[in-house]
Image (cartoon, rainbow, N blue to C red):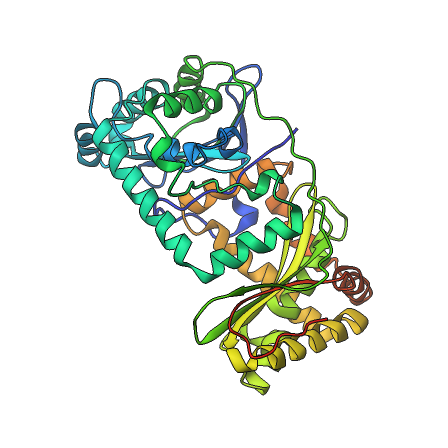
Length: 437
């Protein structure tokens, strides 16, 4: 089964922008683990990323934020080196390595010049098998996490999001936990908690690997295989059931003393495994995902001047999806802007796009695909992403064909399917009036 994960950008080594020229090699690391490699010897640099299944799902109640602090502090020392020493040596060798937490998957990124490759892989092995979690380094990361928690507590958008999704999915829904922690849980996390979570997540049997750059398949197999041999077998977290979308009797309203109201609307949709996934991405681009030229922006922003920006979203996970729109506007314009947005939404659901709109959207979505391949870091991100989506290694060769296959009849049918569900509404601010129902 092919799997993968979305990842953050590192590195600026340019590679060919043509997806069709990306030659993905599947390198067998051991009996159970493959790595996807784009071999490129034109630049003396290796970019690597591990995706480990697990992360914030393992946070204990009352210690939310453990995975976030663990992976954020993963490079804060290694072996007998404290954070200052370890990070200083990495910097001297122009090597970077860091962790990033997630709900279902957590990642470790790695980049090294070829000249430092022996040192870099030795350091990577030490960091993954024996992270120091240096006290000074961890406390610095903890202060950063607490500062972020304070900013979140003061953010009107975060207040709306917390209340909205608790009402939408229920307080017990696993996705509704505060995975970055809060002012109570972050101080409760100990070094022992960090080590325990690391040992639950970083394993040799729950890993996806992507690599790009100046390394051969045999060298990748040898170097990565030696690291995996020193990692434990772990138990991946159990699957999460798809969320249930509750129906609201009234909008979720959060009073917040500010000059603008932030409006949010969500409805359930289908997962990315649905045959209509690519048509859904096209019609979302036309409705509100395509910037100032989209239907919603043209009406609510360009024609009526009620908002600075408005956008729609189609979010598709492996087992559920959602559609949404959001905007911010003056308190006394919230109801008028909402009425205008709902008018566009309903008309688009009933009639769908025109042929010209469809052609322009497909042209953009296929033409912009080249930006996925501008540098080695973007390529390694994308290799992991298509793995976790259970897509084959040759997916870049035919991805654009999936968009080009969307017909006008498909787009209109899917618009009805996507935008015919009942919306759930939320607003934060002091709107003069807000009557979505």
